[in-house]
Every structure is written in C-alpha cells, then in structure tokens.
Length: 120
Image (tube, rainbow, N blue to C red; front, side, top):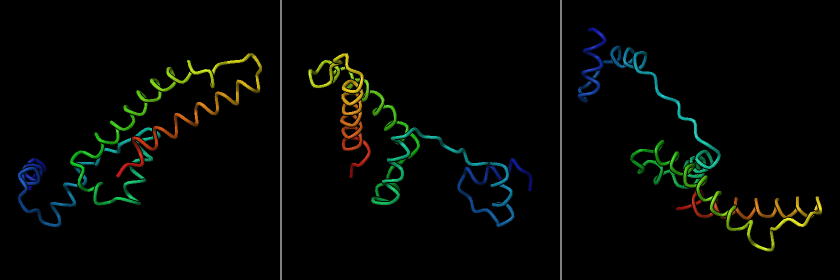
C-alpha cells in the first residue's frame, strides 16, 4: 500500500493494520508544542491535579497558548496599575526600589497564578 492511501485511510478514520500504523507514524511526525512559563505551569497542573479537565479540552495547545497570551496581557495591565500605586513607586534608594520592584513582581505573579494557571 502506498503512502497516500495510508494517509487517506487514517484521515477517514478507517482501520489501519499494524504495518500501516507504523508507516503512518513515520510519515506524520507529531508537532512538538512549546509553551511559555504559564502555559507550561498550567499543563503540569492539569496533568497532576485535573487530568479529566485536560482530556476534556478540545484544543489543548491553543488553550495553553491562550493562557500565555492572557498572562502577558495581565502582567502588562497590572504592572501599569501597580506602578502608579504609592506602595511601589520609586524612592531613589536602590535597595528600597529593588524591594518594591520584587514585591510588585511577586504580587503580579501571584495574581496570574491564581486567576489563570491554578484554576479548576
């Protein structure tokens, strides 16, 4: 059987023999998805804590890339909002500014994790 026929049968959902399955796997290499930090964390969370939800998501790669996009937007929005707050404004003292920046980064990270990543 030729490669085109194997591909046609696989796309049509027809049964493949063991040899055809091996040939199909050689022909169609799975695409490896690369996610950002939050997409990767969401995937790990789903695998470990909620596999039923993971299997229920129709397009998992799109869902995880969406988590990354939403996290980036949320980071930008919160960073703008919090940088105007008196609690995180720069003082001119290097160590104080570093502490404030670290506190702001932690607050943003905690918000993203609780709102987007660790959601059931």
